[in-house]
Image 1: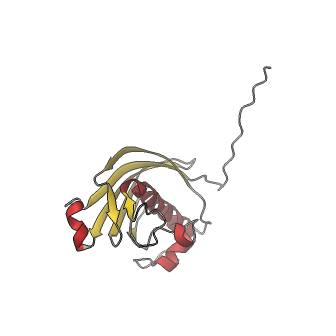
Image 2: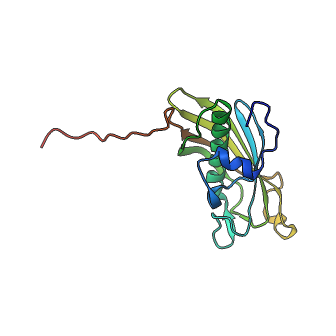
Length: 173
């Protein structure tokens, strides 16, 4: 991928931007990617790995939005000639769910915009998950404005690609 990358980026090319493979790749394409934002698309297919009882719980939208952030980080890493590194979803704030679930066959739009990111790799992204198309029989149960999930996601992408945890040991007996 070069600085003159053409959008959309297909699922095949997208796989090279994520530290995931196979069914763990939840996105289908990247529609646009800028310095501080990304817009991606996904479909809730019959083999989607996050299905529960035949539907996608809206709570799973957190993972889909987090993968949008991972694709943003991977895109910028590749553009800079760096390897794609593993990142971590630390938590969420301001989580709002506007539906209980999303049916199979629904097309999703993922938006993530960087709110802040520091040199140590900690960041906050304002994210939203929308439905853009759904089976006719399911549309009445989905929000009219399309917004399914909205949240601020806290993430960590270690600058050196390594995470070191050294527990503090007590020196007292």
